[in-house]
Length: 249
Figure 1 (cartoon, rainbow, N blue to C red):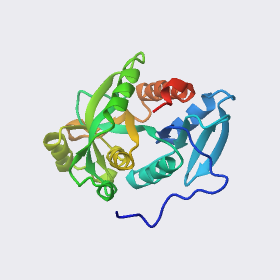
Figure 2 (cartoon, helix red, strand yellow; figure 1 turned 180 degrees about the vertical axis):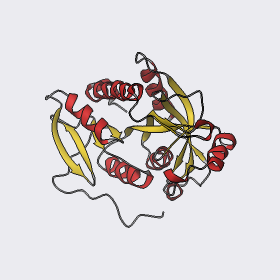
Figure 3 (cartoon, helix red, strand yellow; figure 1 turned 30 degrees about the vertical axis):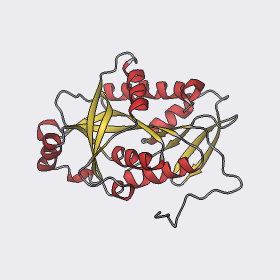
């Protein structure tokens, strides 16, 4: 067995985590969720690399960590969470639409992701391959998000890339046509690859922040609909963190 030389470090004060962790990409989303949590839950916050780990005040319940950006860092966090007891992960991030039928402010629940980042190959998934979230867990997340009022939800393949400023017309067309990708983002394929390798359940939910459909970029970061979608997903995640029936594996 090819055993890694560098492993996640734990010390005497390292907390043992419960089975569920929510990884939140954006700092403001993370802070908004944390601020809305009741004092009975949000008792502890500690640094974890360049992120913050939010822990329930009593016992090893569900935790939340972020911000998270790009494949390598996301997997570094995932490995550390898994080493501390996490067995089920939900990733909440943003994505850009490649399909004109997906609008800014919609939600994408990835059905799979095409590897175009450098981390997945270290976990056995080659460049250009398609990896997938854990089917049962992802379906549970899809069903729960679909039930949120006023959200337009799509199950779709996404393209995961390291190079946000190399989303050229040729590359967009390639991933949309050859791989049927309908959105683009920076973490999902690496998280799927590493989670499968580690035996951790993985699911993701993405708010659509912008669109590249038709070969033109339409940023929607200040769109009221996008902001409302983030708020709705944040409220749902806050409930998820407090619900004991979601934490069992």
